[in-house]
Length: 246
Length: 246
DNA sequence: GGCCATGAGTGAACGGTGTTTACGAGCATC
DNA sequence: GATGCTCGTAAACACCGTTCACTCATGGCC
Image (cartoon, rainbow over all chains, first blue to last red; front, side):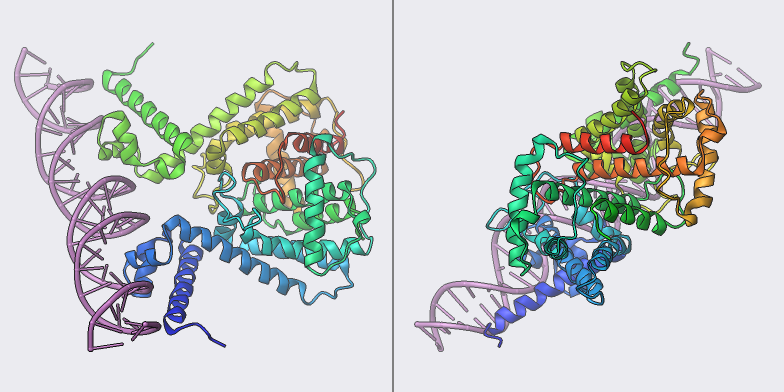
């Protein structure tokens, strides 16, 4: 079981503790509170000791981002679990509502992961294939649901919206990426069911979902909204209707 | 002209300089670089002197937010100027594109003003009427354009989308707020042209505009996008079509 | 014109931060 | 048992926001 040596186990344990405490500070007191000295204090060690685990504070925060993503992924998985796999609309609604609920419940984490203005490549510790390794676990769960919907031929792109020509090359790459990712997740999507138009529809879906959630988290309504829930559901209904999901 | 005394003029001048330097630091080196000591250093004074002007660093940042808003408002005004007032669609496009361009060109400022996770009341120095005084100048310019469109009866809400019942009270307040604000801006909008459904449409318009811009600024696309411009224009076309603007 | 309150700015200090460096104790291995 | 490697410490440096006691020019008032 634990082939790791005694030292390795100890190291892994404190590493877990570090991230755990960092996370607690982030949630309870905001991002400016996640400070090396505070983390060390909670663990009963001194700040420089943390440099045995992370090269800098920013490095730690980066790993924190990945942790948050992973947690979000399992949380969305839990939201998805009670919905029967055959209820495709229900699954889509569950994951979208789950994402919103998570974001509203964890604004600090949401900001850290989804609203940090950083040039690409700095923010995300890219995996060996150049992809964002951290957010992948989160994206995968979205794509698994989307894949199941696609595999059942439940999506119908609107013929009246045409894909902007300038986006076609990017979308083509996205399409291939989707197909491989879905295949990895065990969902077999016939390639002809996922055209460039479908990829475009998925992009637009995400844009609106992300946008609505971000607006809610940052409270950027043009007037005080007592309950944004119905607004979100209205948007969600519009969204599912537009992609032909019923 | 300058009735102010010598001291008052000096005070106002250094205040301007403070905000100017703070702004420069924000733009060039990010929010964490706008530090009291750095600002003071640039001005050739010491940090405690800044406390004669602002009660704390947070207070200064708050005023910085207002400055940014005001600048955004005048910039949008400039974008709007070359478009003839009769070209309503052109005005709407100009202001939306202007907002996007500003956000992409000033990500730090955008984050500061539009993506800071803060409970309401803390963030914005509310005016005497309880409204967000800073963002008002920015919202007003949007509303002026919207008002002109409305006054000409160019908006047609879709009959197939119904307003969520839970939002009606909020929307009613928003509607009245809109009418008074538009009247203040010199645009006379007949009250019957701005129903709750129209207010809802305007809300949705803003949600999608804000959402798309935020997504672009934070680069949260599910795949690398070489040029997001066409995507934005596509969304904008969709948006104007949905509100019946042609 | 002289007086004095006021207000801008200073310097030192306190407690906090990230980070580097030199050093010591303990574990794993030969 | 000696050796080397790893985790952790203590001290130090350079910053940061903020407070406080202090100067000193300014501006209103007699």
